[in-house]
Amino acid sequence: MELDKRITKIAIIYDCFDCKDARTSIGEKGYFSHYYHCFSDLNECRFGVLQDVIDGEHPYDNGKNQYDFFLPDRYVINSGKQYRPYTFMEFTDKFTVGQPIKFRQKGAVGFERYLILNGYQHEQREGRTVTYIYIGSYGYTLDALFNDYEWQEHYTEDFKPFGVGVKE
Image (cartoon, rainbow, N blue to C red; front, top):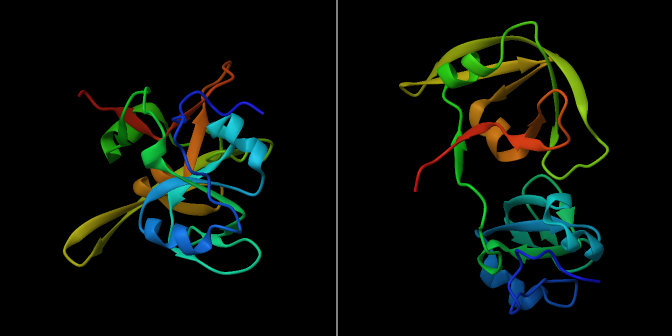
C-alpha cells in the first residue's frame, strides 16, 4: 500500500500496540481511521484532536468516536490552502435560506446528506454572539461546520471546507 503523498517518510501511524507512545500526542490535531488503508488518501480519514488514548480496542478518542489508528498532523505536509471558518456574512453570501446543501462529516465518504438550509439563529452567550445554522432540522455553529463537515458545490466531485481561504 502506498501512503498519501502528503504524509512524510518519517510518519508514525499509531495502532493498538502504540498506546503508551501515543499518549504524548494527546491534544494534537491529526487523522483518525478504523482502517489502515485509509491513509493512502487522507480525505478518507477523520480530522480532529486526539482527546484520549484508551488501552484496548479502538484506542484513539477524538471526543466523538474511538478509532483504531491515529496519525499526528505534524507528519503531514500541508501543501494545500489554509482555511478559516466562514463569518456569518460570508456564509449568507454563499448559501441562501431554502437552498439545498450536499454535505458530510469530513472523510465520511458515502454518507453524504442533501438537506435544505432552513435558517439561522443568533444567541447571546457569556457576552458573545453564537450563531446556529439550521440545515435540515439540526443547528450547527459555524465553527462546527468548519471543523467537522465539508460541502459539495453543484456539478462538482470535490468536497470543500465550510470556510474561506486565508492568505499567507
